[in-house]
Amino acid sequence: MRKATAAAALAVLFTLSSTPAHAAEVIPSDRVTIDVVMVNGSGCKQGTAQVVVSPDSTSFWVIYSDYLAQTGNGAGPTEIRKNCQLTLQINSPQGYSYGIAEAEYAGYGHLERGATGSQTVNYYFQGQSATTTWKHSFTGPFDDNWSITHRTEFSEIVWAPCGEKRNLNVNSSLKVDQGTSDTNANSFLTMDYTRGEVRTLHHFSWKRC
Amino acid sequence: MINAVAAALLASAIVIPPGAPNDTPPPDHITIDIVTINGSGCPAGTAAVAVSEDNKAFTVTYSDYLAQVGVGAKPTDLRKNCQLNLRVNVPQGFTYGIASADYRGFAHLEQGAYSVQKANYYFQGMSQTEQISHRYNGPVSEDWQATDTTEVAAIVYSPCGEKRNFNINTELRVYGGTSNTTTTTSFMTMDSTDGSLETTYHFAWKHCS
Image (tube, rainbow over all chains, first blue to last red; front, side, top):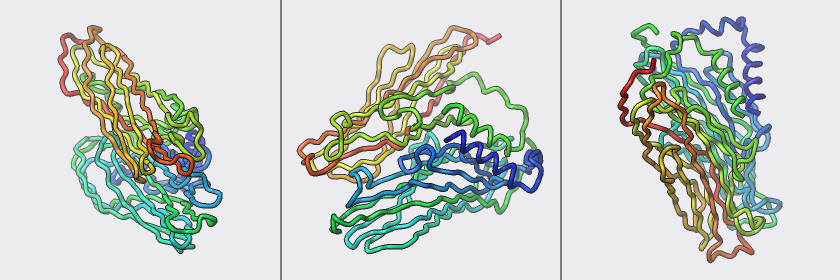
């Protein structure tokens, strides 16, 4: 799937880009861009997730076909929690950058009265212990589409003359809890897609690579 | 899968403007070359790996690393393992560094049940094998994270440095304890393993010709 994903990303680059492919090489490096390096987890097993990257590499979509946590009738005991971890390469140009990073998570939920659910995202940089957690809770009865957006400002200074590349890990998970709901009923949460975007609003560069 | 990651990186290489020709990494610290993965918790097609640009850190994500006891679990499901074999480049001279690993996952343990996350570290050329374990007690149903650090030291006479193996054997075990395993299920998953090798000091005694 990794290969297929890369191929898909390439295909998108070449087919959707309005400029010739070689022009991609001259995109000025004055903004932050993202590459999706890896997608893996119990909610996005091999062959179940698709990655689409915008031609300018500032936004991407991951679309899931089997990201579902469930409890109750028909659900296995370990299906109460599913996760999907995205490894993103963040390419920061040298100089000072300021902008907004945004991630949207969307899906569908069906929770019986008495059941609860949660959507959690852990963000951490590769090799670092520090983790930032965002959690959103759902309470049954619930039967609708849901969408959650995380938005954060970033400002950073990169001294490395050729910019810096770091991997950001984004581990999302869905969990459902049967609670006091009827065990003959089924409660579930799905994630349909994750969208990520970085918008660089200001950039000052101070030296040439 | 290594290929796949390379392909993904290739895809990203196309959108990144070429900078100055890649400098060869400074030869005065340990770098990670290749990571291979295998075990009952990470059979083929279920694990993915990404090594950082500076070759000092890596991330492994799993889609099916889950140990369980109770309803729906086979007797052999109580223990799962995944062995990571790292090929590292050690510079000539005496090198001392810290290897650290972050483990992240989810645990659902019934009252009375408990689990153990364990890792064995073996660095080629060092005689002892280090083992670090972390125990979790039920009732719990949430994300967990553990960090291990271990020292690595190497003396390399070969003027151009040498490649050594660094093995990390990780393991998850779940015990029913006093919980009722005929009516409940306790399980633990590993979502990701992150490793980094930070060189603290290095003495070189000859030049690589």
